[in-house]
Image (cartoon, rainbow, N blue to C red; front, side, top):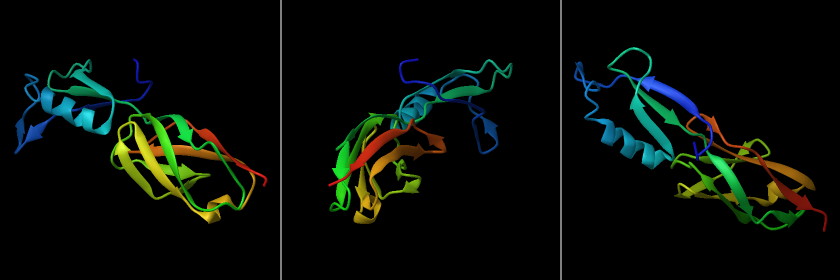
Length: 145
């Protein structure tokens, strides 16, 4: 799959106690929801239950940070995180701490990095958490002045 690996979720759609998923009439709605949260696919379940729909939800993935480095004790800056499968609730983590994150597109997030985040030199682990799924980790370098 071109978007990477993810989690398989199987569910059965009901509305007001009535089953909705048997003839897949609601698959276009499901696919539209997947498009809103990022890359994913949906189809009939292989679980043996003809009413079940399987959804493959892909985790966020970081391709690039911008900038990639800054000097220790610098001024606050905006970190741009480029990648795939970012949802509107995605949060950028900086050395394990959540940062104020702005969703730009499903391929871009912007995080506020404060001066307190820049007290020490060395690599900083950056990752994205979205809907319980965690991205790959990319190192940002805080360099000596």
